[in-house]
Length: 462
Ligand SMILES: *Cc1c(COP(=O)(O)O)cnc(C)c1O
Image (cartoon, rainbow, N blue to C red; front, side, top):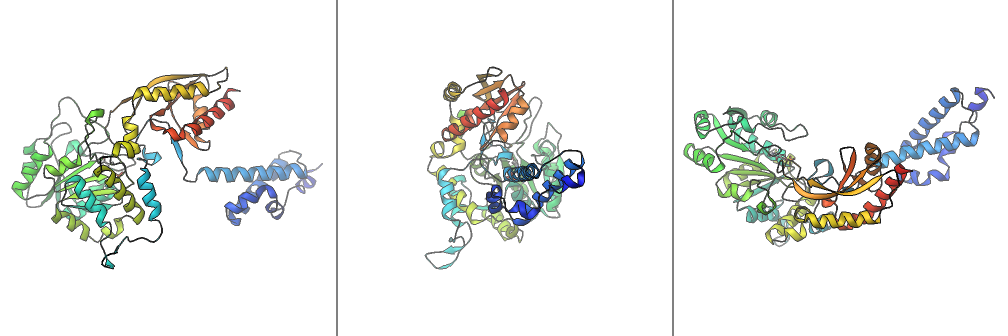
């Protein structure tokens, strides 16, 4: 058969659109999108024919349908969807950092419709947005006043712009950090209009370095928590109380960007993160932290501190651009309530994962391992590993944990299969094996994990 004849076997777009195989797809996406995929598939089919493939009418049609369903599946995989985090990284920025507490999720659902976000139900009058959430944050941190913005980067921007636009902010050279995802402190300073006044050296900065930098053009002193790396050896820097004394003496406010937002003592887990409460107790005028790191809540930036400075930030017109929505406020309220009620260990997923004992994680691994059917070409074992806090918190932290280790196959390929499953499973690759650290997998996801893992093993092993 010649090409011209074969090309007549190509289906028409309308014909394909009517095929029952595409009914579900047609309901899920726009007709325009579907048509685009079908056209692309027909073009591909045409090219195959021109390249010498003899496709019948029916094989051409099923080729087009398969390709279209493929496009649809690919589109669906891009949907934001639940992921099983078996990386052992508790606050994984790519996976949405802190998983929320049930109480927070319920409150987000309850407030998704109409809600009294800016209404005092008793007085029947307009109220300040997030009033109660801010009050709870004050109770929790001991601050006079609090403000909620979109994230900690927004908090830094707003605070610097309010306090120091066009003037100098003194900062140690040891704290000019990049947090990740391109968030570089010097660039945020520049964007806020504040002028960076660097003092000290990478490893050593003394109080006198700050003191010598103070002029009538100094608007603030800032301390930035190094978050994602640590310094050891020949290092020194003044602590926040020294900076506060200096600031008081010269009437200069002190800003403390603690980042990770630790509101309880985590030293029993071997974690020594700067505490928000301590920062405020020691007199920082403005303390900034993320809502979705160790606080265990939704993405947000929290500004806590002295009334004078917090109200100044609240009055900045930029505040309108940085404020959070009602659903986020509901989640922060619930998360703050949990911390205040001292039920973080039982209610906050982050704390549950942090406090899981290595022996319990091993038991979970062994139980899962016993249920797996492993093809002869693969070796699946239970091994020791370490979990990380992540999310720019507690650099170098290592929590003893256990993982399911999958070796003997192409580990990149297995990791890809797990990732592309439903639900998606994320592990990590170490020494040519896939590790699934179960510290970050809650009990209720174990069945899903087993099914996905079993499928991935068989598709690769046979
Ligand atoms: C994580 C972090 C930030 C950025 O916080 P986001 O909430 O991600 O914007 C800023 N400063 C410090 C010290 C941090 O650790």
